[in-house]
Length: 350
Image (cartoon, rainbow, N blue to C red; front, side, top):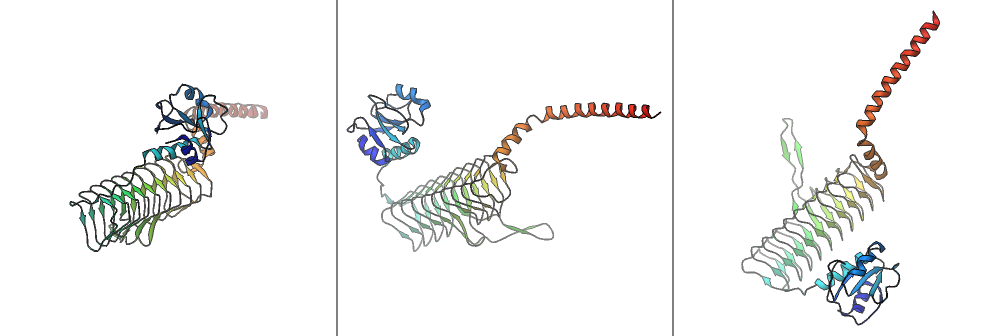
């Protein structure tokens, strides 16, 4: 691919040889002749000078680099992701439905699909064009799947779920399992509440391996467009995750909580049920969120509080043994001081 084509692809400004041919993408240290690499900031300029790459993506504020072909962009990391994806792109191969796959009754499946052996597809399922379903996938009745979606090995899409276009669902993920809902009787026994809602996954969502998204008790559990979910995330019934949010591994969201747009949950963050996190809230890893959060809040800790307050509190926490020892000494000194004052007061009164 010509370097000038790559510059157009990422909206960058090219300096150097416009006819240079580029064969691939790699990090600075690993790039070889013919490949393009990227420089995130000036701190790695020395690594650029020793790299064998043929060309580089660099920030706009990098000065002239004589004899080096560069594309100046606002965000080299983003531009690198776009170019890397372009090199890896392969045309969809419509293998059709493998003879060892099971397809139920009254399904509407586009002719341009790839359905691997041992996939099980229920009744009345709709599957759009250029969908790839890998081995061992189970799709329940009345599921709809949009175009160019990829469902990887052994994932489960339970009945009634709606999956948009260009969605990627990684191995072992479960979409539409029952929500965790029970009523407790007077004997302390737990009676299951029927979970009769569905899950809706909008376009351009990615769901990590072994993540579970529970169906709604009533209505819809919804993952909106552009959401990216890591491995081993738990999303409870009737949760709504706003557009372009990021949920990192082992995060958990309890039932009926709603997240605004571009919310970020760090790894192992837990969010209580029936609360709302507004747009652009960021939650540090390992935190526990127990109440509503305003737009733009950056929080951490357990319970989660503003991040600056949390970091100060954490710094003090590790010093608590020394602080307690100092307080004990101060109390002894104060007791001795008060004792002497009392003796002086009594002596003066005689």
